[in-house]
Length: 241
Image 1 (cartoon, rainbow, N blue to C red):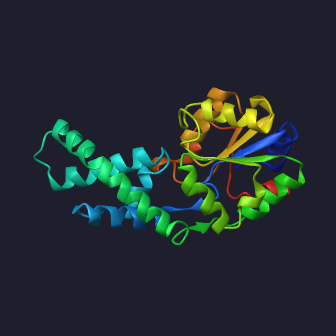
Image 2 (tube, rainbow, N blue to C red):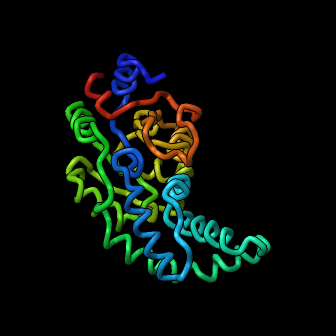
């Protein structure tokens, strides 16, 4: 069930700050990923990949995304090859793939993406409640900051940390703990708002309360199957609380 207004209000009352994920939580970036990956695969002379496949690979950082895409298309093209040979080809192609992907992603960043309904209103409500906000994403910082600016969301955040900001990425708790330090809050009083098991696992390990939106990616799995303190159909649920 989506959490009640009273339950959400109780969580907010105990929070001194909030950390908000980006892809799948604030902005639907699947179109950007599909465009950049398609152009990268063309550069490498590889076949395209379906958007539905890309959607299930998003969320664990660009490095993981590229390796997953390369492995998928090579498996499809060279089914007779052993897994170890495919892995070796992925690693051999990875440097060129990364350079091409960075070039194309920066060129399309935000052009094929849309802000989810209710995001700006939800962030405004959090700010009106006096909560400092940080955006914490596994997307590289050089991609995240321009995207937030392009969608008019950058002004809500005191800090923006990408997947390259710390030694490890979500679902490791380190990024959340470091973000809490930057916000000047304790984990127990910092609310994590995300869309996937990555966010929930990191929050649980860090000791942060966590709520998940129901419309994000979550690697193709039902988000309500993830252990969280609640679920939101839209960030506008925060305005009611």
